[in-house]
Length: 143
Image (cartoon, rainbow, N blue to C red):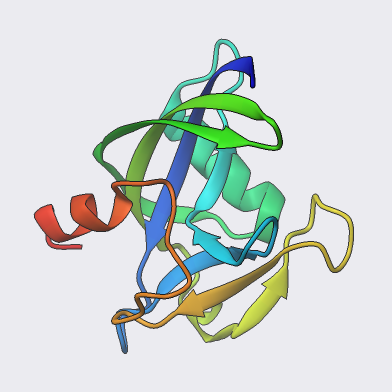
């Protein structure tokens, strides 16, 4: 297994006020899993700015009340290589309350049909939620 290098990411935890559901992107390769929305921190960009930029790019929604929950670090195999990611995890809210009523949507900056954004029920345990450690961090911070 070859090493691919280190990746720094920033992700947003957004809870729907009426039921606590978590906004996630849904993936199925190699098996189904969910992730909070976000992406790679560009060189010279602060992680908090990444989270704001990524949510605008991915679903066209500006954020409010963005605050750091913690940092996670994971080393894991992916597509025949070893990945090492450092994830800044932020709690955030939508600036526009109407955004909470969108049940599902595609990610704008990906090819159509590849990934969709959905509300994961607050009590869901399957499919797994990544990055590893996000569930424990959410519980520890009362999110």
